[in-house]
Length: 275
Image 1 (tube, rainbow, N blue to C red):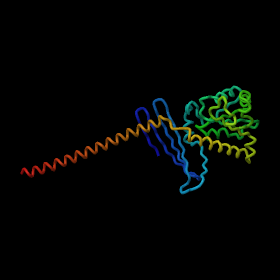
Image 2: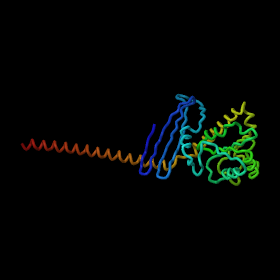
Image 3: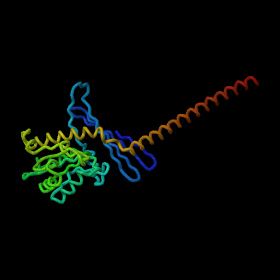
Image 4: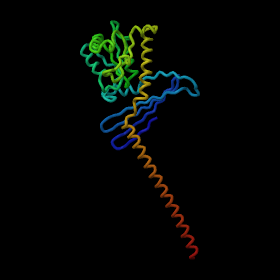
């Protein structure tokens, strides 16, 4: 299903996609706005239970493929001032550690960072960074770091803020003075592997856990851009005014026809009396 709105200098296309799943239907609402200076994209996911179902529902939501395709089509997409990507950002070496440090502690960062470190065998699994980046496209920054970056960050910020030796850490936004490191959860590689039968299973579990946590929060914190609402509301108001004008014109025509009919009848009566 697709609907379009047009006003002077801007347009909006809204696409509604339905996907049936074993755990219930998923509805994806993609809105594309075009103005003179920018392109705006907003995506909303809605999930429900199967028909006539009364009971708990388990849904495993991730970034829709259509959104990843949009992000892959251009390198300039941003949420606020944060660059969006479907790929992980790689920070290798001491110099990159300073860049990562600046990103983590930047006051204007509005997305969480999923930091994935490596040990001598690499990260938890070889593709975990790419999978995280695809699952959380548009909602998180996925950073893959090597040992040099990890230890440089540890020396600068202290062990309580570190992520190294194959660990995975979630850095929430607004990491400033007085922030509590315990608010930014850390999973060591050992703890992830201890609770799973294999590295692949451990990867699946931690990705599912963070997907649910981050996507769940996004439902309450990411709002539709005001420009999109303005285009839709202005177009609807204009369309409603045009429809009212058509109705008024039809009513005037009807009244005019009725008045003409009355005049004709009166003229006929007068004519009969005269003759």
